[in-house]
Amino acid sequence: MIDSHCHIDFKVYNKNRQEIIQRAQKNLTAIVNSGASLGGNRRTMKLATEYKDFIYPTLGFHPSNAFKSDESVIKQVLEELKSNIHLAVGLGETGLDFNQLDEESVKKKQITLFETFLGLAEEYQMPLVVHARDAEEKALEMVKKHKTIPDVIFHCYGGDLVTAQKIVEDGYYISLSTIVCFSDHHQQLAGELPLSQMLTETDSPYLSPFKGQRNEPAFVEETVKTIAKIKSMSVKEVDKVTESNARGIFGF
Image (cartoon, rainbow, N blue to C red):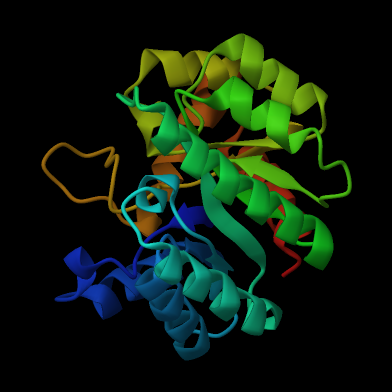
């Protein structure tokens, strides 16, 4: 199994990161750690170097950080990303997060940065990991203008089914997180969307399937099991298809 999106570089894992990774190594064949900030990208690359052929890095900048950061920080992120592009298996996470966001100037800043990442994904021919929250249709509209991006993943998708169906019809991918284990809406998505366009993730440390327990990459097994149950398929088959999808997209 593969956890196609997590953040084990976050400081909440500082006390037991090695233990978390060792647990993942017992159950999984790979994890993709997504950079979400300047420091996050640096930590992600370091982890990928330390755990070669198991941890794979994507480099990005979370949209919620876009309006909190000075232009100088964003410029540095982009410069370091370009310098280290050969180390990454993808770009992101990046995208739009309009949750509880009314200020148009803040939305515009997110849109501008997302457009920059879309251009980079085209320029470097890299897969793109998209964070879209309460902005799924807008994100899809922007992605569709960049037709030469190799692959696009709408990670931890939580939007409506109609938009999700448009995403997969356009040839893009939906990644379902461990939230599918306890969310009726996400279970509906899992039932209606084709496995051929699906990936599995945890989005650790968030969205644990176990109450009172912090999420971790090894728990992606619960995502796979839940999808298998919903689709009346074997765990092995769901694992095989979703792992193949992730390997095909990220090229490892």
